[in-house]
Length: 360
Image 1 (cartoon, rainbow, N blue to C red):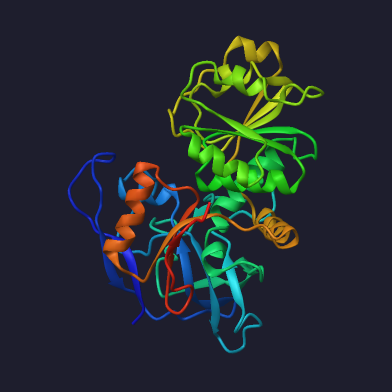
Image 2: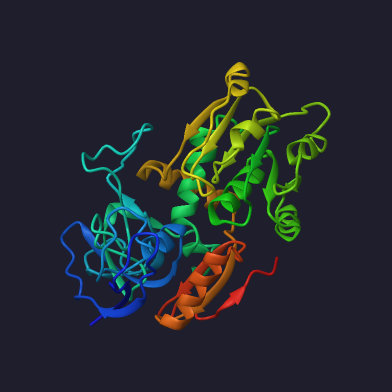
């Protein structure tokens, strides 16, 4: 029987509990005529997985495989046109191509750890609809490929669909560099020919971002960071065109001082606070704040095609091998402490097989 890693129920209130991991067996998959079985080679963590362990994510449940990011080889059925091919998995269902949001009446169902979608990628195998598979770009390792789906899709929508400024020569600010989504926005922006600037809580992460193509960065913990950033902008374009943000907090009040009139703040998360003031200073400058989530099946395909064309490589912070609870717990500790720069990956079966850290 195939194995997987799930969370185990213990007493505790949401936000105060931290569910332990447990190894479980899952049924042998029996694909329908529209499905394929993928033997997984690697899977990657996202912040939603940490929130699931803290019971802070909608639909948290037990006895189902965790994680939404995965890459592997299609092993059955024998009639599948995908058989024998390496694929990456669209991490959610219920959203085909609408630019506004999911078309399905029940909304968007993301893989891993919730009752909305019983499939997950921290397992030996997963059964997927064939329409949710994409051929894996050949230049990516298994670790890199597993790092792409959820963060890549979220970054794609926040930058290309929502920021309105995915144009060569524009000045883009990416906040909180080091997380998976922020790094993918940086890589997309550089590949698109934008001038990308970053913020971080420490200089080391800014230096790593510069090696990846960022024009510069500032430490957001310092007073007046927005003034320091503005002083580094090109003289012929001394303002930020758009901010792609995952923190919330004071991004509007700070951002309004450095954004062009009519500038856009594309927000894909609010890790600092669930509330964010929208000030009159932003109104007077016609600043727009646009919420952004993951994305549609079409956006996923477009994102993978761009990664293939531009030979973009997601950043892997650290990886471990196998369904080893102690090792996987270590990855979760990296995420809890914010130590990572890039994605945290579990290689599976014969895929990858080598742990390691980013050379940046």
